[in-house]
Structure formats: structure tokens, C-alpha cells
Image (cartoon, rainbow, N blue to C red; front, side):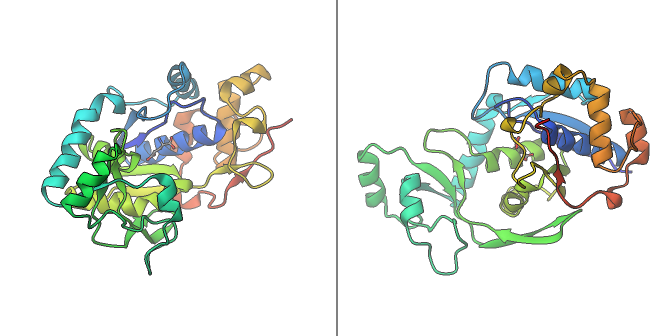
Length: 300
Ligand code: GLU
């Protein structure tokens, strides 16, 4: 047993579908089974759909997933993110980038840099070149001056995993803190030492862990869990049918039925069984978790 905390960090850009709910259940099980508290963070820096947050909270509560303490809202923490970016800047660890998305896509990547990585166009601009670009009216993004090109993290499901690190954006040109920065600062500030989330974010973990190391934050225990896919092997989405808890309720299912479906998919329940979250916690064994995606047909 340990102290520390796990978390679920939804973006209120829409309703949670059963893939998100399954990840939330897993994050809860990982946290609770290791004696950690479980924190909720609302990642509302970017796209927010009115009412989505309320529905997400309702769905999590209806499934029996409880959180500790007050939830954290990223939009309230802008000053904190700015302070971290500025402090990195004072250490010479950042630079201004005037590139548009299109210019980055068009620029040939530097030799040895991973595909899609920022080619470093603005890394070594002189102050005069920076002034010229500023005069043209572009407000710069702030990038990390990374001194590695890859970094290795340890993941409970993926083992030792090495991925690319480039000069990632810390603050966008429109002033919004970047996701990678906010996640690392938030997890560090909240004492979150266990990060359980969908494995679509595994590729982001090396750059986040590297950034954490620069900020003196210990790397969390990572568990990037398999996603839920549709019958075409694509990530589950709204158009795949009755995929949200409200959709399932409209078909006559209860939250307990949905929890049972998620539990079966994790091999934590048998057919016809309706265990509660406490039962699932008693049965949870991370080493027995399915390692492959859960493929569902929700169109019926
Ligand atoms: N807000 C992100 C999402 O909803 C999750 C970020 C994270 O868990 O690090 O996909």
C-alpha cells in the first residue's frame, strides 16, 4: 500500500462514451486497489461543450465511481501554467516559435528527427529575426528547448517504452497553455503519482515524463490501457450507435447494467452478474487485464 493519488481527467468537449467510462473505471480500480486517493480534473482549456461536464459527472457518479476532494479545473490555473513556462524561459529552456501549423507540416524534418516532430525552425533565431516576425503580427508559441530526442518511460502494461521527444509547445500562440504542459504541472501539483489513461496517449508519455524531469517532478506510475474500438477497428465514437450511458439508458439499461458490461469486458464479471464497484475492486488484478482492445458493436 502506498499514499499518492490516481486521477481521471476528462475534457468536457462532449459526453463520455463507454470507452471513456471503461478507462475511468480502470483508473478508479488502479487507484483504489493501491490505496491511492482518486482525483478528478476537468481539462477545460480547449473545446468545451455546454452541459458536457455536468453530464460527465453525473455518469461517473451513476456508475459508482467516487472522487476525493475538490475537482481541479484547468481554466482556473492559467497563472500557474504561465509561471512554470516563464520559469523555464528564465533557465533558457524555451524559445519563441512563429511557425504556422502549415509551415511545420511543410518543413522537411531535420535528419534523425522523428516523423511529425517539430523541425526546430525557430530554435536559433536571432533577436533581430524574432523582432521581424513579431512585426509581421504573429504572436509566438513558446516551445521547450528539449535536449533529448527520445525518452523512456515505464508502463505497467507496456513495460519500458521509448518514444520521441521534440521541442514541444508549452504555450500556444493564442496564449492557451498546451495540454502536455498542463497535464504535467497538474499531476505534479496534486501529488498524482499514478496515471491511468487510454493507450492513445502512450506516445505522449515520454515527452510528458521528460518535461516532468525538468520540473523536478517524479515520473508517475503509468498504465496506458487498451481502447474500445468499433467493428472497423477504429476508436469508438458517437456515430457508432448507443455509446453513452444516456444512450444505453434510453434502451432500457440501468447504470448497473452498463457497469456489468464494462466489467465483463475486463473479465471481472460473468454473464448475468451485476457486481458493484466494491466487488470489482475485490476482484481486480492488473496482471490479468486484457491487453488487446475491446471491440464492440453498439449499432444494434
Ligand atoms: N483530457 C484527456 C482526454 O480526455 C486525458 C488526458 C490525460 O489523461 O492525461 O483524453
